[in-house]
Length: 135
Ligand code: RTP
Ligand code: MG
Image (cartoon, rainbow, N blue to C red; front, side, top):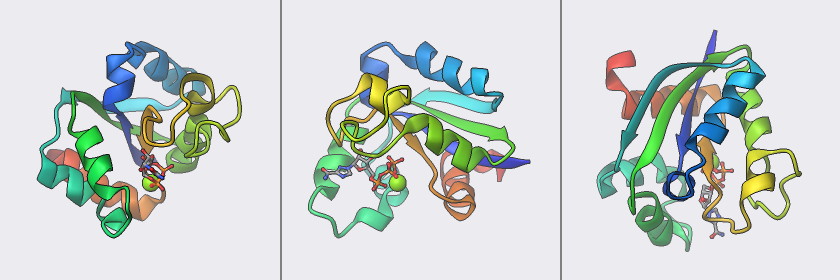
């Protein structure tokens, strides 16, 4: 069974839509196998988003993602990586289709409510970073 790392980013927690996001994951038939509310330190945030280290938005992204509590989850199911990315919608919420999480709840590219691993390789790396006990 495939696993993916999902984050409800600080904007999603601030807007009190944790339940809404979790409900969509569960309705889809995916299983939550680990879940934790935590505030990221800068080092963990930089490691998580290391692929974007050279991008102009990197410092702002790290500040945003460490700026309040987030919900980290490991989500499991058939093609979980792709299934959750489809639920989340496009990175830019204005482009994201209505009916997706980003399409329904966000307007700004940075504050786009959720993260989902972009491949099974990324999922392995990110799950080890957030939930080392799951390996
Ligand atoms: P994520 O990694 O958070 O699941 O999002 P993603 O794969 O859809 O998008 P990615 O390209 O990996 O970007 C990571 C996050 O960085 C913020 N971002 N800001 N132009 C900008 O200011 C900009 N572009 C991206 C978003 O929070 C995006 O989700
Ligand atoms: Mg990404």
